Amino acid sequence: MARDGDSEASGLDRRGFGAFWAGQSAAVAATQLREFVVPVFAVVVLSATPAQLGVVAAAQWLPFLLLALPLGVLFDRGDRARLLVLSQLGSLLAVTGLAVATVAGWTTVPLLIAAVFVWGVFTVVFEVGYQSAVPDYAPRAHLTRANGRLQSSAAIADIGGPGVGGILIQLAGATLALLVTAGANLVAAIAFLFLPRTPKHSDGAGTWWQALREGVAFTVGDRYLRANVGFSAIYNSLAQWVTVLFTAYALRELGLDAWAIGIVFSVGAVGALLGASSAGAVARRMRFGTVMVACATIETAAFLVVPALQPSWPRTVIVIALCAVWFLVGVGTALSNVLLITLRQVRTPHALLGRVNASMRTVTYGVIPLGAIAGGLAGQWLGLRGGILVGSVLLLGTILFVATSPLARLRTLSDADTVHAEAGESATADAER
Image (cartoon, rainbow, N blue to C red; front, side):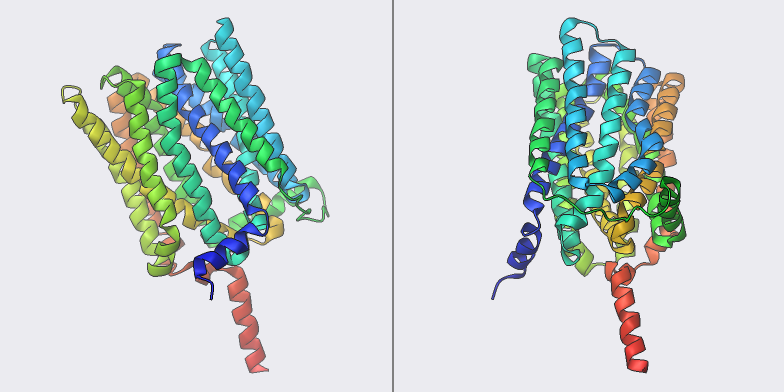
């Protein structure tokens, strides 16, 4: 008799999940390199102010607010696999263009903002697309396992990305780091080319606007999806408030270098890998609502340590403390992400999944530019440390929201599974007849 793990693996692999996973892994590696290199580049090379750092960060996330909803309709009506290829080729062109501009000495803060915005456009395509496509390559019974693998890849990219980025910047400058990022986008595009073509999940009936409204209405009408949006929106905006100031704070006030910051982010990604890899076991053994409240508490309260650090402390102590913070944040965010993504997939009809993901991304990622700009302005007015302190305190509101939401009252993912519920209703009706 085959072991459960072997059975699950075959269930995933027979649908082309291997190529999908490889492409997603390379794509998130490129994203993590970019997210580390850009703020360090802005601080070290361009001497950006806190307010400018906020605008740079906002430019990366603004496309989610502008484009996620129409792209959701496109992913339900089009070939998701080919759109994923497009997302990586577009990112490849954007990062290569910035590398060329850097070599030519043309890079300025406005040019960096423009390049980051273009990256953001293709990031929207990837983020909406890959999460919508997971059920195309993973059987419904294995969605938690598949999402755990994908989140583990993201965590591993988090581990390697900042470390590799720090080394490349330290030894060879930002240009090489940008070219390595472009190489990862190319690998992802090639992997996605091997995916089986996906069918249209929506028949295209009705206008584009009607299709878009259908996805928004479903999201707004589902209590668990509304709670998911609220959790993610509050956390994402305020976490961005803190993180947009962190790189400048670590470099300018705590006296760290790019290598040390890379270590901190990499240790945080180890925590994310632990959280993602344990999601399946946690979902089976613990109450869903308890896990959600615990994750919200861990991933928000840990940030309070950052403004408490003193520049006069030994550098080793500062680095260890920051590593502990990012480790806890990584565990909480990865574990909650796997479970929330799976919850979204089991609550949503497959024909609507692209539009539901897009509706949620419009809000949960669309608020990030607001957090970035608010954080940048707070850092400009209150100083880097003061801005981080205010953001960290406000972030605690996430705990209250989750604790009073339907997420906290949910026992298991099966209780929220619409297919499971419909099957139970059907069985009850059969028994009554």
